[in-house]
Image (cartoon, rainbow, N blue to C red; front, side):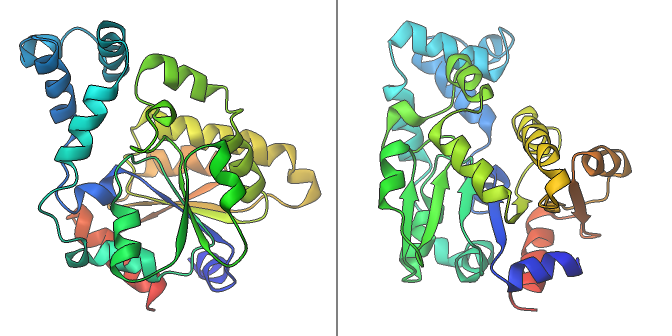
Length: 263
């Protein structure tokens, strides 16, 4: 934990934000999105859910509809109503934190809205053209799996996900460069999420190539409860697992961020 604090105090800590942070303010679970895909395609949600995993069902939606525009519009409406982000201590602490930049795999706008609510400057980066807007001294919010303002940037179905597996987009190249000189803290992620485990593995491969130069950083993932199996697996990838004894995931994350940001 002390090395994490040292990276934080020296502005060498990148924050990676997952869906658990958005769930903290009441956003619906992914199952609601699958149900909506079924409804828009005139299927019974319970039956549709047995036809494949989420990526396959989203791919089927794109094939049948021609694009994901209708689904993106539903997500944008449903995920951005009747919420006061200022009621979220987790979002406040993220805004106030000394994070070199913030990456997120979330599509929603709540990180941006939180910065707006507290008057904090930022630049949103969702595609290659956005990279030219970045400049020193202004926090970057990198929408790693896309953003609602750009349908083509959203990683949702099998095709977009498999393209993401190549790890060769401009945002991937930026991440590689950033993580060679800074530590990464992952929050709001399920350790059983295949997407994030792939990212862990990819980063591990990148770091190991440069380990002989002494530049491999120690990075961290926060989990609300201990898991010795995952701790051992992540350790071999150069990722240290931090955990809490608090059962409630939202409360555990809030306490962890308070200790880091305000401690």
